[in-house]
Length: 255
Image (cartoon, rainbow, N blue to C red; front, side, top):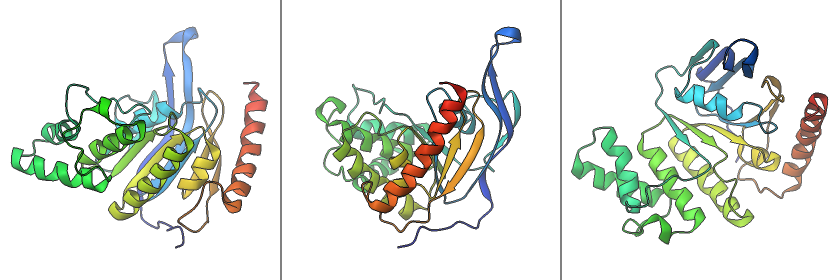
């Protein structure tokens, strides 16, 4: 199938956003006048060198922090955030971890149980609800984290290098799962990664940030058919082009 091209109004809009930590001469500028529109239903990957403000950008969209300058608008959309580490509560079962997100939303107990079972099925973990996190593989724990994020009934899913610590095969399988869930649920996804091929494998668009302070220096459309393979020639060619641009940017800043 072709990569869907969204024509809807932006679900996430950052307008001239800057973020500084500290004050005066000791202030550290993490983001510098970043403007970015993400239409509803788009899968956008955000790429850049370490320390360029990628995670800061997601924190601002999630409402965990406020910009020093500029504005962030999610248009009333519900936003969920998923980190690199699953951060599951070890004393809770798999079902308990997912159900906790529903409880915080005020979902009734009977409905929570049914919804939790449905979410675990959606990430292919049906039957694992009674397990504890330590009984699962790294990939399975990340599936639980995805289910918990979906339990927030999010319109926008923010993902901060969620597969960075996984082996290549597990990561590839989770790429397939995430792509399926994104398509079925018509989610808007903002996905931060250091991995250029991962960005091309998943995204409709790749946004490249400069080294600190982070600025949008270039955007790359990904007009490749889905499903994609991370090792395909088409993905490799586009990833090589983006990598060359990333190296140029990192070299220009000497970092």
